[in-house]
Length: 386
Ligand SMILES: *Cc1c(COP(=O)(O)O)cnc(C)c1O
Image (cartoon, rainbow, N blue to C red; front, side, top):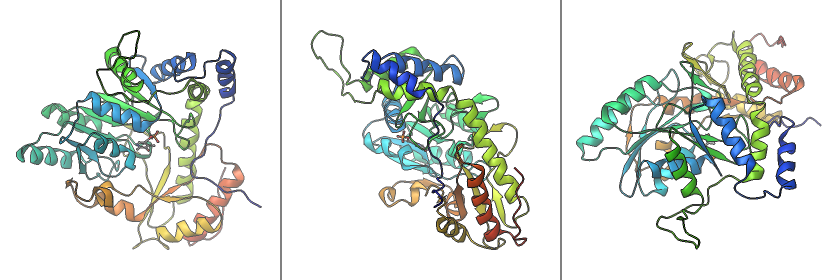
């Protein structure tokens, strides 16, 4: 029997167990230790050598702490990209604040700068200045950071970059996650590298990092007994998870290259298909890690629909998935304000995430190509160059 082809599965590098064994040998089985420190340093070095990184239990926890450090509280409003995973928006609700959702633009599928400007002006006219802006680099594609940062600076609103999907991506040569007041990373099982579950907050000062570490370890004041003057959280990364992370950091550059090769593989398959477009960088300012390769199928031009392709994959035990359903269309956020048009909604209706893992075999790729060609090409003959 053929094995299932996954969208994005963990891909170990080989040295993860070495770091875990070190932790066992030294009995560092705790949410602190040499692997946590080492993993943080590896990420700092990878991003630019100047940022300060706090390793946490998840990307969601990192977003929550970023909002707390931006002083987001009850009754505040926070601007958030609509087309994203729910974890980008949920921490706004944890703080008792209201999300204000923004449409995507067509080049990067990320936050539309025009709709962002419109939202800020309108929210301020209604008497509330947004406390923060959460921008996402979806599927690894960098958002239009020049435009977004300049609008944020004009109104003096801090930007939080959700880089959960974009470790290794760059905008104008600079690492995603390092542009905003804070950046967040995720090391969940399906991300480009994983610690089984985990995340990180990217800070620009030691002070911001220390505050995150303090809050993530139950906000314990400096005293011999347990003394607290803040509400704390249990959000620190464990030294075991961080051991996996150190092994994964050794192969991150390879993983980025591998994901980008998967994107090239799909470009080759789709190049002559009518009505089928592969989600790609608009120009050389954008460098995506292509965490997931995504195609858009225009039903008016293509041979079949997005659903036809998804079901054909399913039949062959190949996992594919519609893109994130925009947050402004989610029942849980139906009362939240929204600015923009129907770009995100339209993309949601006709786009599909394709298997993009770096550990797929040639045989897996052949199975994928065969289905795509049978469904979407009128040539029907199957040939992919390797
Ligand atoms: C995965 C993800 C998160 C959440 O990260 P976790 O580590 O799973 O909590 C947040 N935002 C986006 C866009 C993600 O893809």
